[in-house]
Image (tube, rainbow, N blue to C red):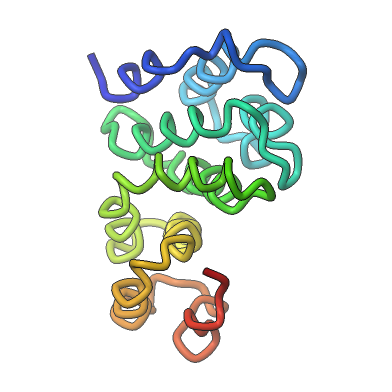
Length: 173
């Protein structure tokens, strides 16, 4: 059994209402199907956008989806090309309007912070590094470590996340 399948099985998707007013059981199904196809033109298209979140409004399956995506980052069978999309959706979920739901999403992501730091320092994909950085800004207890990462891995970050352009102390939290 792979970690992604295990994490999906831990949640009662059938009992959750999706943003499209159906059962959320289709969210993991659509996500897994999307992984086998080409990258969508829009982040979360077909499986998260308008299902797990609508703009910045988080829906009931947000926490389960965050946990699923954290597992997807650790799953070696998930194509690397999908990392920036997965991290972009995680950024939506950890920074959503409903603080209580966003806090639960952060709990789900807490276990994969090492993977997020790795995404930044390896520089495999600039967009993935940027989204990983954005997710990590939600963890105030990691601010000093993120500041060091920002300095050391600045070549892998876009201009707006560079030291001198983004002051981590000025961010909320």
